[in-house]
Length: 341
Image 1 (cartoon, rainbow, N blue to C red):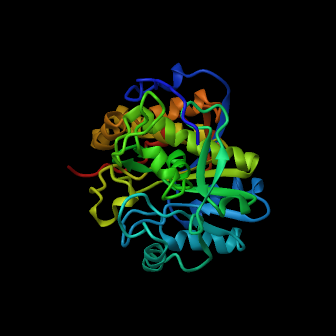
Image 2 (cartoon, rainbow, N blue to C red):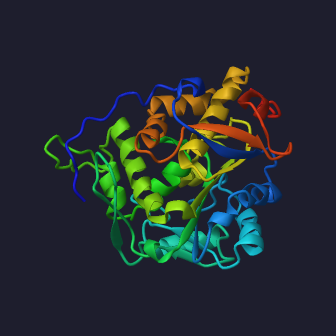
């Protein structure tokens, strides 16, 4: 790792509206069917880009976490569509149910991830992948087993996050593929002006964190190139990440749907836009999630992915429930059922 002297942008609390974004468009597919069948339907739109030894990167959660993508749904998907795939994870930087391989294995058992192989990719240490064009890193430390895979399905539970504002595909990869003892520390510790780091474990500032997460993601997706795909599940969206387990804040944002894309920047922008659209159509009960994104400067994840050329932040949303017709954000959330106050 080499850290550059760099002053991050300060616009992470500013939401850039779709009409104010520039560049080309990517396709994002959308279904309101939040079920194992809906998950398979969304996945089918991107499945052809996977080949060889397939990794499935998802957040398997702390013990008994109530909001993770259900293991039974993932089991149906893998058994039907990816019978030789392996779920991949890394150990955590924080103390909990998954900071050692031994505890992590027990947590996987408790949460039902027993139906296919699970590779804790940093069990035997780290390797470094290059970060092309990064402002913070030249390389990122990922689990040493990661390069053994030919392609990757990024299966993400979209939700809030205590530090990142929200957790989409970018956070799932950027934190989830970084090795627990090395890469995650590089991301979470603040960089001094002289390139050294502070000693405090969680000292990183808002924009710096978003940009470091994103550069970590770039290292992994550049490694897989066209053989990484993205599915985001907008269900049980607490302001808390699944790393908080049973301590997660209550879910107050309505379930929306499942999205799929070949473009990480497009799919995460679409999920954030759908949350905003619920607010703009009068469903103010999602204020907590929107406030979490803004107060943590999470929008910087989106603009930085665009700046680094990781994808397009403009997209067309195609409705899998209506012959793949293009659908507006307002119409895509028209079906949601508000939570009672």
